Image (cartoon, rainbow, N blue to C red; front, top):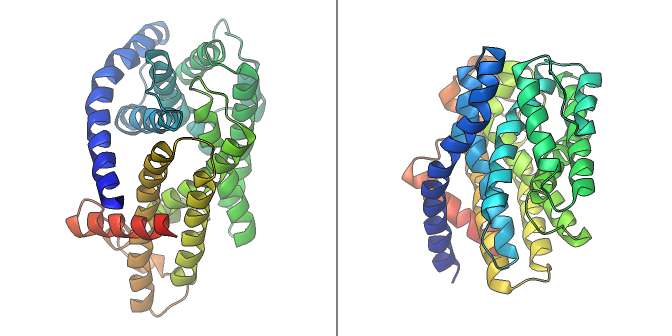
Length: 329
């Protein structure tokens, strides 16, 4: 049964990519081109690539899977909301990560009022998107609160630039940052999440943030960011902890009061994303053993030694197997 569901998930994923690719470019262009002309400037190529290649697929994918829990497909308005969220997300990340605007300017975005002339192109894009979303979502109040929590989590994550940050603090920051992002994405669809659904998304989002940090280990070491991965002295212990967090999500999700087949699809899809983290951790465990144990000697390691290649067939099959272990618990 599990492997049949995996085939359905893979088929859904490829159909989603094909459909979303046709949808993204016209919407992105309709939003950005007028602002490009107004500011006589364009987004940096690297930023635009992140938006088009990752976020404008990633956010709609999460939203589409959320709608499946409720036994339906995503509407055109919800798809538009999700793409707009995908455009805004990396720009807001850059505001905090690169200190492009002050905390006061960041807080001013929470008014959700269209400003006459934002100082920069990036602020203009985010301001336009947030005002548009705030006026179209089912719960403007819930959306505003979730967005506020995302901004607070982003500001709090600046502490990760400190070398003396404890792993307990890193874990708390990581879980909160990932959790509220995924709760915010739910507010882009029609249904208003219940307290139980928010708890599930909190657990899921935190686990997925850890997954992302595992794959970003090379970049985070280079940038001096302290994560659970970069500060890890025992990847086997880390894998055990991470697996427990992923299993906890699966168990919590099964308690949601929705159709069993819809929930299983939701759980299996996200379990496979999380299982990628286990594949990467197995690789890091081996590397840690080869280098004598303890925190990895990053200064002596090359990028290819820290990056897990999920395009390899062996890695893909391992992912499916580890996901099976997660969902059968």
